[in-house]
Every structure is written in structure tokens, then in C-alpha cells.
Length: 401
Image 1 (cartoon, rainbow, N blue to C red):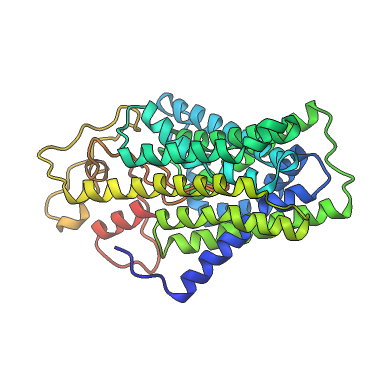
Image 2 (cartoon, one colour):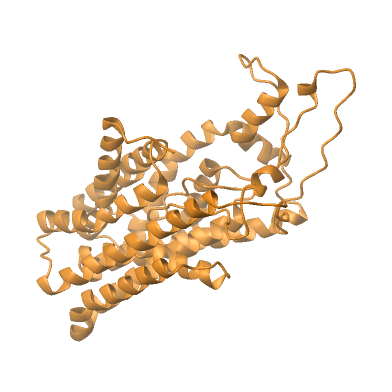
């Protein structure tokens, strides 16, 4: 159990919420096409963070480049297909969400996109995962809140209603990105997977802009400042502070705190753009936030209850879609026990009950997958300089990297 957050962690959470909340107002303030804004956000983010993340995982990049992990073998084509579909969902999320900020209010756009956990729960239910009454209650509250908040837009019609629908599409696409990432993250670390996904997403958005003849240059000063703000605030500060905070607090806590993006973004849009929140929409927006909070917290409660009441008599079967795990060679004789000790990947899988599943628990506007549980193929690396210890500890060290 993680301890109470210290002042540094609280500061990181505050920076995360404030930085991410600037996404919608900065997009709405620009005059360029939302698709062009989405492309440049991914392009600039990859140009700045991509090399940095690849350097941190340079050994993994070398192994992938040499084909030592067998990514192009027959059993790895399926994760690659799911990864491509996940990047496509990410591109759809960016396109729909950033377009919705131009057609409807920032408050409505951010509130409807924040329903991503609701759609993710529905996807899990469609896959046969049992859903508690508390989760269904949260789903009902979110639906009622969305209908109440969008009532005025439904009556008036026009671009506001289209913007609301695009925001919902953005939330569904983000939930699809998370669900597809679960199936494609079998043998790739989080930094490398997020970097490659961002690159593929940017290339897809570039192709769409080229086919639609959307200009990617010649922006005015306001648009240039908005792009710079998107790079500095949500892409660098938001991603960095979120990673830092997740090392000190739970993903459920951060998921709930990220719901503050709606009121903070609404206040920012009121200050920068003069957008006022209609009094009739406030109860609906509040119901959306409450419903999503119930959905997010119900998942963590069910997982904690399952862990406390777990009494397993047998190890659950290894999943069919997991990568093939080779048989480990027997330890040579007349050697200390640690020279032949290896970590069996089925040990981590056995820690889950049949009601649990490895899942990406937290994303924000497709910036990446955080706090993940994934299956990995074991490998043996050369001992790093300065690491003196038994081979068993070294294997566990390499496993968790």
C-alpha cells in the first residue's frame, strides 16, 4: 500500500491537472485546422520526447532492431496488427476531440471526452468481464449527466450538437486505444510502445491532411503559440509530472484527479476565450464527473476485494494469445543454485484470478499508457557493470526493467 502523498507528490499532481487542462483551450484558441493541430502535436511531441525515450530503452531498441525478440515471427503478427489498430484509434481520438473543441464549448468537450472509463467498462463487459452494480450505477449517472448537459445543444442543433457527438467519438476512440493496447503490449515496454504508437499516429494524421489538402504551414502567431503551449504543457509537463506522480500514488487516484480537467479547462476557456458556462448545463456536467468517478473507483475496489479474498488451489491456464514461453534449461551441476535460477513468466500470470486481466489502467488524450501490467518473454542479458549479486537477483532485475 502506498503511503500518503508528500508535498512533492501533491505538487506533481497539481502540475499534471493544470497542464493537461490546457489542451482544449489551446486547441480552441488556434485558427488552424484541428487535424493540422493534431498532426503537429504528435509530430512535435515525438521529435522532443521520442529520442529521449528511445535512449532510455536503447538496449530494447537494439534487440528489436536485430529481431532477437522475434517480432516478425508468426506468433507476433497479431500483436502488431493490434498495435496498428491502437495507433489508428489514437489518431481518431485526436481528430475527434480537437475538432469538438471548435464546435462546442470547452466544458462540454472535456466533460464528454472524460467519459472514456465509461466506454472502457462497456468494452470490458462486452468481452465477458463481470461488471458490478456500482459500475453500472456510475454508467447510468454518466449517461443521464451527458443527456442533461447536452439538452440545450440537442434543442438548438447545429455545430454544438456535432461537437458533442465528436467529443463522445473521441472518448470511445480513446477507450478503444486502451483496449487494443492490452492485446498488443505483449513484448514491448511502455516507453517504446508509446513512442512507436505516437509515430504511427502522426503518420496517419499526416496522410489524412495530405489527402484532404489541409495546409500544415503558414500559421498565424496565435496558432504558433497554441502549438508551443500544447508541446510544453500537456506533452512535456503533463506527461513528465504524471509519470512522476504515478510512482508515488495509485493510478485510481490520478484517474479521479484528472476529472478536474473539466472545471479547470472551463475556467481557462472563460479567461482566455470568454466562454461562459450555461447554468442549465452545470448539473449535467456534475453528474458526468460523479458517474465517471464511481466507475473509476469501483474498479479499484473490486480488485482490492479480489486480492483479499483470493484462495487459489491451482494456477490458472496460460493465455492463448500470450507469446510462446520457451522451456528453461536445467541448472548445471556443481554450481551454486543462483547460477541456474530463472524467473518463470507464469508466476506473474498466476497472480491473477480468472476475474482479473492485465490492463492498461490510465491514459490521457492518448499521450501514452501508464501503470500497466503486461506479459513479457524472459531473456538473459549480460551482467551490467557495477551490479554484483547472484544471477537470480539479476534475472529479476532484468525482468522488471
